[in-house]
Image (cartoon, rainbow, N blue to C red):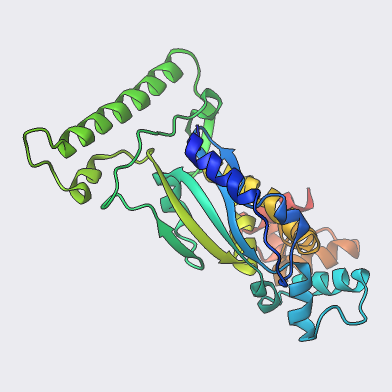
Amino acid sequence: MPLSPDQIAEIEAARATPRLTLRAVSEGMERHLYKAYPVLDHGLVRVIDYMGDDGAIVQAARVSYGAGTKHVQNDEGLIRYLMRHWHSTPFEMCEIKLHIKLPVFVARQWIRHRTANVNEYSARYSILDREFYIPEPSQLAAQSSVNNQGRGEVLSGEEAARVLDMLRRDAATAYDHYEDMLSQEGQQGLARELARMNLPMNIYTQWYWKVDLHNLFHFLRLRADNHAQYEIRVYAEEMCRLVKDWVPLAFGAFEDYRMGGVTLSAKALAVLRRRLAGEVVDQESSGMSKGEWREFMEVLG
């Protein structure tokens, strides 16, 4: 269970006491505020706070007061222009603070995005819970034979059962030893900051993660992509759902130009123009490497 009864009661109490404000409010995000959305077996994503909305992006771009005389259609057009031409600073006017509960090995991949403010649960001061990520059988895959960072065929039968059993037993044994090292019954016990070194990478940690919308879009473009590792992708996909309700105009432009769009190199653009002119172009005459040509042909479908 991602949340304890006490935590659920705290969230319900927070949502039951709304406050008046003069700040810009996103009605879509207000529906999500404080709620915990489960991810994986014990993880969660929860919006703690946010600043700004689609209007804040437009206001920053125009450096204007209020809505002015512009219409919603003009706001959407401006946001799409900003996204299309890679203007980043107006999107930095919006920020979001998330509470994330995630396995440690996912956190270590996540933290590579160094454009956020992070405060993580400290195992130096507190004792981590006995919660481990154990994959669903459908996610137990062999190493890909063509991609060093990817997965191949899904394990099945006795092999899948053997791997799951090892994951469960190893995690339980490591945590038993962790508790034993911390024991205070008749002995001094090992310091928490040292005992934690024995914990496995699939144990859960938690953090507050605050980021502006521009850098959040960059994170989502990489981590919600089909090529991203499943365990971080499911977090990104849940965050996409929240962001879509928070800034629908900006997210629509992001989906169109970043998630659904492609960037062509000068060589690729030249080949495309030659092909549109009726010329037959192959890899050798394109000036591209084999890898570039393969990726270009995948884009063309």
